[in-house]
Each structure stands twice: as C-alpha cells, then as structure tokens.
Length: 246
Length: 333
Image (cartoon, rainbow over all chains, first blue to last red; front, side, top):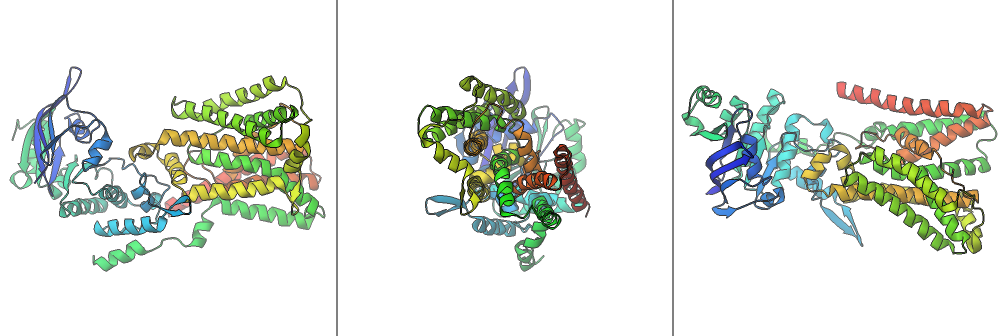
C-alpha cells in the first residue's frame, strides 16, 4: 500500500527554486534514504511533507487521498511524525515524561487532575521494550546516551501510531555503537509496518537500513533506486553531479 | 539480547531515594542551615529561645513566600526583578483601600488585583512581545514603585480603618505559637511544590526552562504558560505585601526596596538554576531561612551587621560553586 505519494511537487522561494517537479512514493513498511548535498532540497522536501509549508505546485497524497497541510499539527493528524535532528528533548525530565510531553497521562483525585507517573512509566517501558532499546523510563534524559535519546524521540512518535516517520540526520554526531542502536530502531519501525524517510549524509547508515535511495541535487530528483541495485560509489557520484542521473 | 534481559534493564531503577537526596543542592543547604542552628544553640544562650526562633521564622517568611514565585519563574528560564516593587504596590493599594474605611477582604482583593495586573503585563510583554524577562521586569521594578508613590503621594499610611486590628493580627499575630506569615508560607510552599510535581502545568514549567523549542514542537501552549508563571510570581509578592503591611503596621514607598535580590539569592542558594530547568520549593525556602539565620547569628554573636552582605554574598557563590564541582565530577565519572 502506498503510504505517501508526491506528484510533481515544486517549491519556490521568490526566484529560488528549492524543489523542481519532484515525484516519489513511499510504501508502508519501507525505509527510504533521502540523500543529497547541502542545499539540495532535502529539508525543503521534508518540511513540505511535515506541513511546515505548502508546495508551490504539485499534489500530495496520503494513502491515495489528496491532502494539503497548512500546519504541522495537520500532518501529525494524518499520521506523519518527525524526529528532529536535535531530538527536541528536555534534559531535566525523565524519559517517560519526555515521551508524553504535551500529552501527559493524568488521573483525577476529586476535582483535581494530577499526572499519572506510574501509567506513563509503564507505557513508556512498553514502548522501549517494543523498540528493543535498553532505556529506563525513570532516568533523566541528561544521563542518557545518544542512542537512548533517539529511542525516546522515536518512542514519542509511536504514541500516535503513525504511518510515516521522517527522521532528520538521526545518526549524526553519535558514537559507532549508538549508530548501530539507532539503525536497529529504524528496523523496528519497519517491522511495525511504518514507512520511514531517513535523511542522512552517512552513506554506510543509509545502505545498512534503506530499501530504496532517493537523491536530490539542486532541487531535482536525480536518482530513485532500490539499494540492492546501486553502490555507495554510484550514489556519491550522483550526489556530487559526477554522474548525471540514475 | 534476550527479551527478558531488556525487560530487566528497562525495569531497573538507577537511583535510590538516598542517592537522589544526596545529589540535591537543597539537601546540602538544609544540612548547612541545621548545622548553623546547632552551632548557634551551643554558642549563644539567646538563639534557641522561643522568642528568637519566632522572630527568625517570621522574618524569612516574607522572602520565602516571594521565593516560591521566583522559583517557578527561574525554573521556567526567566527572572522577575519586579517582586520587591510589587510587594510595595500591593501593600500600598491595601493601605489606601483600608485607610478609606473599606474592610480587610476588599483591601486584600484590590491588592491582589493590582499584583495580578502587574504580573499579566510582565507576562504578556515577555511571552507575546518577546522582550527578555530581565528587561521587562527591570522596567516594572521602576514602574511598580513609581505607581505606589503616585497613588500615595509618597506619604506613609499607618491607619487602616475599621479592620485595622484584623490586618495587624494577620501579619503580626500568631496561631498556636507560630507567626501567621510562617503558616501562610508553609501552606503556599506545599501547594506550590505539589503543583510543580503533580500537574501538567508544573511539568511544562520544567520543560520550557530546559528546552523551549522542544516544548513548542510538542504542542505546549508556551506563551500562555509564561504569562501564568509571571502572574504566579506577582501574586506571591502581593500576598507577602499584605502580610508585611500587617506586620509593620504602616506602609511607606520604600517597602521591599532591593528585596528582589534577597529573594533571588534564596532561590539560587536553594539550587535553582538561573539558566532555567532546575529548582525546588524546599531549596528556596531553606535558602531564605539560611540567609535569615546568618543575619540573626551575626547579631547574636555581636558581629557588626555590616558584615551581613559579605557573608550572604559569599554563601551564594559558595553554594553554587559546590554544585558546579559536584556536577563536573558527575559528568567525568
């Protein structure tokens, strides 16, 4: 089933053409690596999918239904969740509270509503177990490794049971062992039938988990191939422009 | 790894109650305050008398109540320099209202309404116009006291109409041998602590102090939250103003001058982080108590009160330095 389909999407900022006529589709349970040099249009594309701004031209289909988003909340309501590069976590709060931040579980004591820490800890523990990550719900995020932080950010997206998760450079600036942890988290998302868009500069990571690789260069889609049919050398060539198109 | 292994790892608690307590600056400041009290009890005959303890607790209650509001503001990543002026304005509005022959409840209502207005203006300018809290409340420090001067024509008010006795009892009296302001402090401290720990509001206050952008992305109404934080702080200062008017039995326009510095000192000694995201009610109250104990001990030991500023100032830096050293050691280990 197609989770997401873009048809001839363009985005202009005044005279600058950030995206030209990009079409792509994404199936449920598919991991797509979105690659390209700085300024190639990756983040513009992600922001359009995430509802930060509408495309200048083109159409977006979610599960074969045409949609337009005006605000990020609308994208979230349509089952799209984003894991931000800086993860948007609060260091001084526990993992469980971070997972539920903004949609905390409460229980009533008479007329008062108080936070239900026990329920949040239990639910977060389930999510972490589901992601096969050794993350303790009560630990403060400050004390956590990069991989555990990713698990918290990803567990947060799982709360709303999304169809599509966009991940912005999840493996930048973390240790080798933690990278392996994060790649496993992505595989877990795929196992749950979630479509993942992985934006990354790191060739080995993309080749390790992506089913398909899409390359953008100067706002144009220049490659869209199954990972099995290509090689890091070819993708590098396409990204830099040494190879025109694949 | 086997699933049971993961379950064990997830279920594990990394810190016990004791180690969490030892990791709190508030705990060590509490120990310091207790030690200071014990030393004073041993060194002087005058410290541990009921009258002196009554005075000490009453004296720090006003700063303590304001420190509750400041704690919340500082946790949220802001600062409120206007609390001393709000205390003065609140007391003055109360005095003018009661001086005109109105009952105590109306005086309290107008005083708190004035505080509410100040807090709302602070909050709106900070959250919606995005002026830094330092600047907004620095301006309000002048505006608040200026308003009190204009309202009173800079005269002292010491007659409070028909409910005068009731007001003096409220601020200067005692119940079961405990000064009334101390009881108010205790009640408000418990309420504030519960709100910070057990409500979504409290949770969000910690969140915006740590990572405001993250709070926005998760859909928290950050701007409304900020306004509520500054209103809370102003209301605490307003309550302290009412009590202080009752205790002193007269209101002048220099009431609460520079008090904001003592309040900030108390919260910082108690472990609040001026960068936001950390602070405890218990710590701030203990911080306020410690400052008062230091002041009291200098008097009782016959040391010139000129030394007071030096001791309190040094203690602020020492308390935070200890915290830094401990934090560094933790991140190394």
